[in-house]
Image (tube, rainbow, N blue to C red; front, side):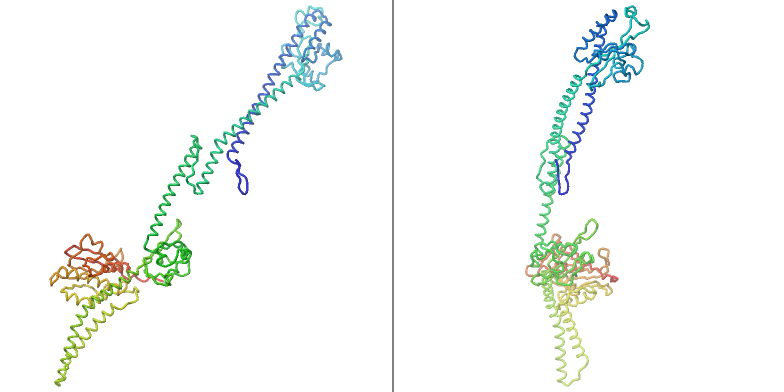
Length: 637
């Protein structure tokens, strides 16, 4: 019942309850016992008083006749005989003057008593007792000179008519009390009996208290201590993770209800734990199964968790990454040495294309995004970083670039052929004229220069598209991008009999982007339109038209530029329109195209924070709408 820790002892509630109940019971029984003993003694003394009074009456009746005849010797003998009875210590007779006229102790006869003595104070504290005074006014309980406990009872010797006419008559007729009979009784046996009764009573009371206390302690142990201790043990077991522990208390009282509630709570916790573990296992399985890299960092930008894809991508083991700064996985320059809480929020709340650095030193292009984790007080706890390996996209973009370049080269070769033939023809004319000695006019050299400039411009545009540029977004004019794109594709469109209708104002606002990537998107869309128009109209047709429009617009409430490509080709079936931007999906016959054109275009437009939408009606038209946000004003430093 006593519990201790390293500093002090704790008294359990069962001990406190036992102490309170035992002390309360002892006090109650003690008070009841004292009152009962007093009541018993009072009843016992009442009996003694009555007995003493009866003895006095018997003595007076036994000596009455002798008193009437004034036979003193006979009176004294009778009194002596009564004094021999057990319990009577002595008997005295007082006359009217308070003198002892007779006593069973001869040496007292003739003496006047001390009216202030304890044995006499009852009679002499005032007038003589009334003839009809109750016993309690005529009795005195005291200890004599020898220290013995005695009871003295005085009984008035009354005067009546027979006394007035008797031979001993020596008083007037109006005198009612002639003397006093004083009977002194021993109380030793009474005291002994009382003491034995008290001892016996206390003994049995002690036994009763002890038995009741034991029963109380057993009851408290069984009904309070053990159940409460079992509940406490249960809380410790559950706190330690043992959710299978059950409290085996079947009582229908409050403790039983508490135990039942505890078991229900433990069962609920077990179910919740199972759900949490299942959710954690499910989440861990998702994280392990992710193809994208996931890195969790704390508020100090230290790595705390990585998934399998991250380790495979970077060629590190989890232990080699956990606890390391986040900047170590970047190719350089993206993070500095400060803690995450000191970095601008924009470093983590945007998606950017950056480069990871593997353990072997390999640079891996990734699309990086981060989500900040905050607590209830809105303080940064860490960041969940996601990265998608875009190596294949880069390679696909490069392949698409080469494919477009190849298609352009075929058209450019045809376009260059005409001005070269013109140059050759005019050069031959010049030779013929010079051989004849004719004078050359300015027309022929001017035409040669014009056709040469035409060839130079075509080659320059082709070289500009073919050249690998640094992938840096800068303010770009959509007008210029479309102008160069059409310079490369217009010859092919004319060759295929496609009529081009282009409305592109040169006053369009600039957008922030990569010139070459946007050009690749536009070339890919134009080539798809060429294929669809040629499929529907193999020969010339008035409806074989490609329309290109560019105009100011809006994107999610921000200023933007909208570029629309509209053709009247074969269109796209409704059931596949949502798949055409998936990688490697193509509606073209096998061997024609890679299925990456629109997927790459979608990736480029998304990287430019824009959107691309496709509207189509099979057999009627296809409309591709590209929205790109305009260049924002520079933020004040």
